[in-house]
Image (cartoon, rainbow, N blue to C red):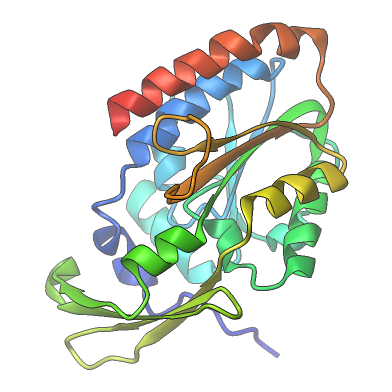
Length: 263
């Protein structure tokens, strides 16, 4: 029995629909955070989508492997970007064990996990995949982001000339944002759901997964999160070596400078 692809409808147009996204900030941040990881290492991009981040990191000096739950997204990535190492995998059950030096899981991929149990499983899977001293960098959008920019709002943009309409609803009780994406040519619509999680709860679950928290940051500038933080960046490690501790302050300052240049 085949498993339905959660993003099959939008995959062919995903890059056009996300053309406004500032992948540059994530790329700069990853390049700076790589200084915390002992060489050589393999970088695993979880929820890689069509591989935009992988392409932007080409030539960075380490191999990147991408995994995503959607075969259609990976097919579009190969067609657009060539034969990057891509595989279908569930972030809650990654097929890697103590072999990965860096994990990224960005563009609110973790918010697509709709239960606390799923989030815990993903964080435990990250910890299991990392080698000692490895680093994980993931982000999450906040309830403020969902209520301020999505709740009850509808808009249409011109991705690929299709007239794509986004209809959004937010349930405060479940902290769930539901988005229906409709295409102007009348094709089947796409329904997506994301859930907001409290940042302090996520930070606690990072530690419960056996990872060492290195910080939670407002994505815009990498300062301290606050009540109007739209997206938070989480940084953690599987143990912290003396070398990692010694580099932390200088690396974080470079990340903040990179984030400011991208804002």
